Structures are given as C-alpha cells and as structure tokens.
Amino acid sequence: MHICWRLEMMSTIDTAVPEGARVAARVLLFDEKQRILLLEAEIAPGSHRFWLMPGGGKEPGETFEGAAQRELYEETGLLLPVHHWVWTRRHIFPWQGRTLDQYERFFVARVENPHIEPGCPDGYILGHRWWDVREIQESKAEFAPRRLGALLPAIVRGEYPDSPIDCGV
Image 1 (tube, rainbow, N blue to C red):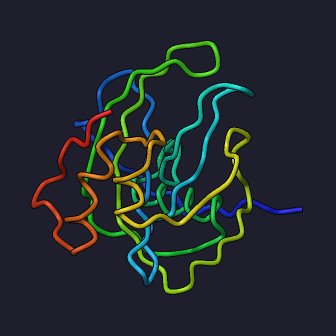
Image 2: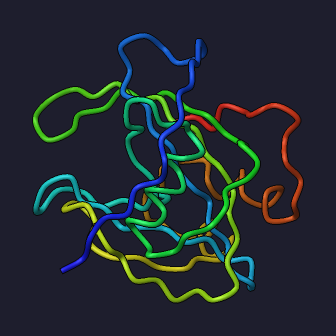
C-alpha cells in the first residue's frame, strides 16, 4: 500500500487566477537525455486517449509550486524541486459527465534517473512514457497542450520566457 506524501502547505493569494476556475499545477519533467515524461490519460473507458504532464489540483492554502511538487511525487515517486513557471493555460472541457473550467500553471523540473514509481496515480492514467521532442512533433497522438511539440524546443534548450506564456488548449 502506498501512502501519499504531502508538502507543508503555505498560504498564498493569487489574484491572477480566474474566479470559479479549478486551479492546478503541472510539471514539465525532463531526464538527462532531454526527454519529457508524459502520462497517457483516458477520461472514460473506451474514450479518446491523450498525453499530458504530471500534475493536478491545488489544495486550499497550497502554493502552485507546492502543488506541482506534491503531484509530481504522487504520480512519479520523485521528490524534486520545481523551477521556472513557464506556461499557463485556461481550459474549459468536458470531464466525466460535467464541464470543467481549469486554470493551470506549468513548471520545469529535471531528473537524472528516469525510473519512476507512481505512489498515488489517478484512475484515468493508463501509463507513462518518456518522449523526445522529435517524437512528439512526428506523433499523431493527442497532447495537452496541443502545441506541445512547438513549445518544447525552447524549454529543452533552457530558454525560459521572462513571463509565463499562454500555451493554449
């Protein structure tokens, strides 16, 4: 049995978060070969599948960075610092029979050993894979965000925006 680890929560106020939106944090996790870890998701059995970064909802009183670290730990077993808030997005989409309005922030983390052991995976996650940029750009798979292949090269080179950019749906 796995026990989910929790970071110490810190109080934060963020006026940039859209009112009424569910807030979440995601992590662009790169290994030593500059590959990114993506999780394969399926909203409901037999529905379409897509790939996304580790992450999830921010808990009350938790910072975005703290949520990113906690979610990364729960979904990969890796306790890593997160850096560089690089992207943001607001996405309104159908989720398990209802409409979800979600605001996300994306952070960067790096790991030397690409071995992961999910501790508390979400039920809609089917598996994981390390992808290089070229594979994403050539793939017919669906990625979230959709422009992932176009946005990743700068991040892989360590070229982070001065201010976070909207990565789109």
